[in-house]
Image 1 (cartoon, rainbow, N blue to C red):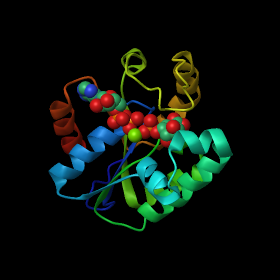
Image 2: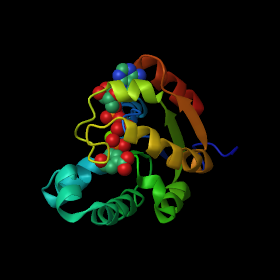
Image 3: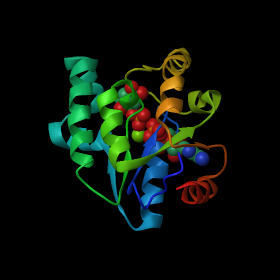
Length: 168
Ligand SMILES: Nc1ncnc2c1ncn2[C@@H]1O[C@H](COP(=O)(O)OP(=O)(O)O)[C@@H](O)[C@H]1O
Ligand SMILES: O=C(O)C1=C[C@@H](OP(=O)(O)O)[C@@H](O)[C@H](O)C1
Ligand SMILES: [Mg+2]
């Protein structure tokens, strides 16, 4: 838990869908002057399809395979910021790759705040915010297990970025 960014050079965001990984990942990368890799848009670029379409047509397992391959490619890089999808934590091989090259930041945003956001493009939630709570019960222990540090996303974005920069 003591190793700092100098030893593990990437910064990786994990956390629930809607917790702010993509938004704060981009802002953190801008502040560090590093490249930013967001796995969901990368999967969409690679396949030419929306994440929701992949889920609906091919199923979650097919999406998870694409996600693992995309994480593998991101982990070839150094001094980059990586935003994962909220479910990346469910595959130990994803977390092993990410932990080997990066410092894992668990973004913790209150579920009621997340549920109030428009998350209709997240197929696992499918407009039913109760699913968010079920997923959280399953995943919270995993986020806590793998994270090098937890950052509460309960302030304006610019304040949270400062907290992240201090934490890494
Ligand atoms: N601290 C914050 N203040 C205001 N809006 C936020 C904050 N954190 C996240 N958001 C908003 O929440 C939504 C979900 O964020 P996003 O980065 O897409 O999450 P994730 O990638 O974890 O699913 C976005 O509209 C984002 O702008
Ligand atoms: O929690 C999940 O399983 C998912 C989260 C999404 O990413 P965000 O966490 O960026 O919303 C996206 O990867 C996909 O809809 C599945
Ligand atoms: Mg995202």
